[in-house]
Length: 377
Image 1 (spheres, rainbow, N blue to C red):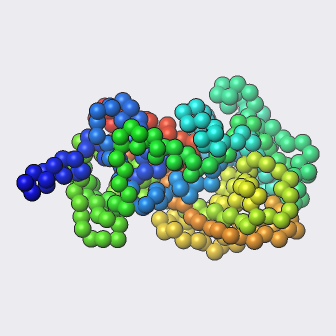
Image 2: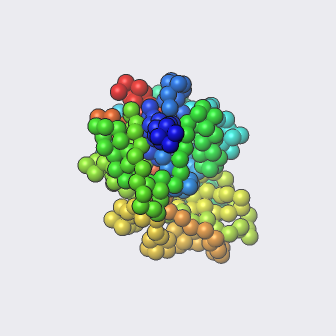
Image 3: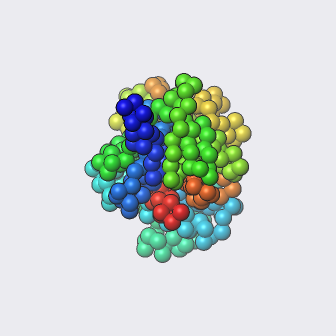
């Protein structure tokens, strides 16, 4: 009798058609799309934390695909065709999740995107026409324009010009993740949390994992295995070119003054971003101020970057205003030689990583593409 129970447990709890490692935007999308195509398959998601611990739950909620200076900066590592394809992938990704889950569920607001140009990057405005022309085949209209009477938005005189993006908005990343989680559960996808994967035996499809904080190792068997842990995939795939990029986010206490602007804002080639949430200022980024230190998988706060963000808040965003901070957190993103996602397989394992800080925009589509790759394996 005991032997039958052990055999049954191994079959029902440890053996699956597909094992997905990571329950962020990409991992959940992979499981959902694979299950949709193979409804009778058994699919398991393994997650290290009680909730996803990477960038998905730490996301700032920007439904964006690239500010003007960020896109111009991409030309240093990609050709125009690659840049255009990446923007299209991000934009279509945003359109897909809005269509599938609905704006109400995502708490999406089409408030547009904006970029503050200081003296050092003011020349970017001269290239708006050229960039709009490149992107017109995707959007059918001009994406970027100069904001008139920008002084009414209350920023300091360090801001020389503001560029508006007419196709961006903001959403609640927690609501999006919750919608993915519920959809996966309804489809019969199993999700185990508090399980840390320590090794993958690729050729055999064996995943070795342990309860977080404990030493007992469990052996899961998957006919196919998908790694969707983004920057953390380096631990399971050491030979990859992945490079972690830590992002800091600060959230203020409720502001005691009126906010004269609305929307999602960027500055400094997209490295800094901010928006208003429930009368508070959410401000993050600036990893470019200390690139080397931010190539880390540790959830720590870099005091140099925190100080830089705090100074931007009181000197540029709300000049002369007192701001008190209530919360701060960090998320880990993944980067590489290019910003385009990396989707590939070897043996019984496939990976979808390197979202370049655009998980909201492309996480769903990348997961969908990975599920298609898995179906062919």
